[in-house]
Amino acid sequence: MKKRLQSFGYAGRGIWQVFRSETNMKIHVLIAVLVVIFGFYFQISIQEWIACLFCIGLVFSAEMINTAIENVVDLASPLHHELAGKAKDIAAGAVLICAIISAIIGLLIFIPKAWALL
Image 1: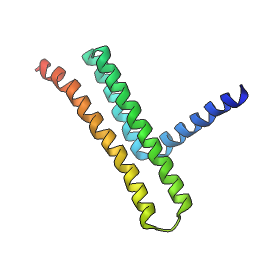
Image 2 (image 1 turned 135 degrees about the vertical axis):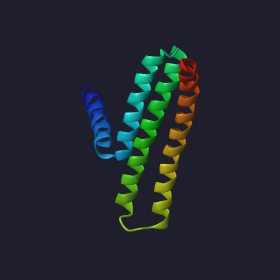
Image 3 (image 1 turned 180 degrees about the horizontal axis):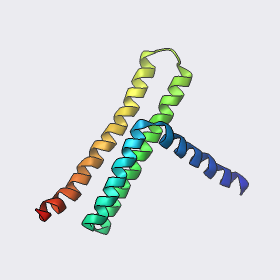
């Protein structure tokens, strides 16, 4: 039981480290806060909340995996190496894809609601 609780502590520490140190994660958090505020303002449906929360979790998770990959690559290859750069670029590209798809989903949810107010 103690080891299980410790594992939650380690995970929490990892989450905190990424939120504290990564500029892109701070941007993702800001956007997530805006999505939640707009979600309450526009009174989005439960299905729309599920989509928004899924997208927020997906982008946060992708950013954390990207950060982990970057750290491991930097540890394994402190000098510039083509494959190290390629691995880091691919991981960053995965985050970008998640963010773009999430933005599209957000626009599909919020544009009709904003348009209806005009």
